[in-house]
Amino acid sequence: MATLIDMPKLSDTMTVGTLVKWLKNEGDPVASGDMIAEVETDKATMEVECFDDGVLIKQYCGVGDEVAVGGAIAAVGEAGEEAPAAEKSTPAVVTPEPEAAEAPTPAPAAPEPAPEVVPTPVVPATTTGSRIKASPLAKKIAAEKGIDLATIHGSGPSGRIVKADVENAQPGAATPSSRSSY
Figure (tube, rainbow, N blue to C red):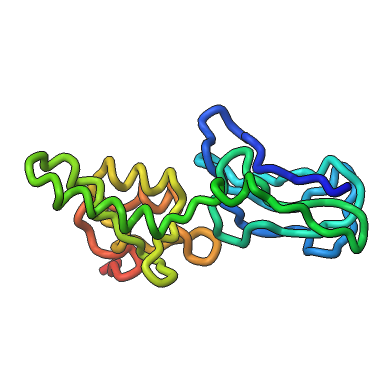
């Protein structure tokens, strides 16, 4: 019988994890103790361990997907076995794009308070379509400092904006990659 591998809670404050890299592919044999994926939390990038022997029969999320703690990320079972439906993974996969679309909508509907409008305009520097490629912690720090993520060049995997990029940026400053040292 196949076993679901859930997104582990890797820190006390972790609510979602972003899949950075698969270390095993579908169809690869896995043993207890093998690392199958790398996950970025709000604080660090860590590896996810498999606790069962068998074959990785299904990957429920792709690189860059955010999955809530406890949501299924993979299934391990016997070769040729049918992967179970991952009902837990469907609501657990967090899609950042709808959040970005929903966040600006309440601000125009509620014309009175200005503080609701302030954290909303955060826009990604490195984009896939209209999606921000930044870690959750980087987004939070940028919102607190009033930094537009569109002005920051990401140094993380695939140009992803990480905490250090936001901490080194100045509010209202030009893109770090376009600065001149003269």
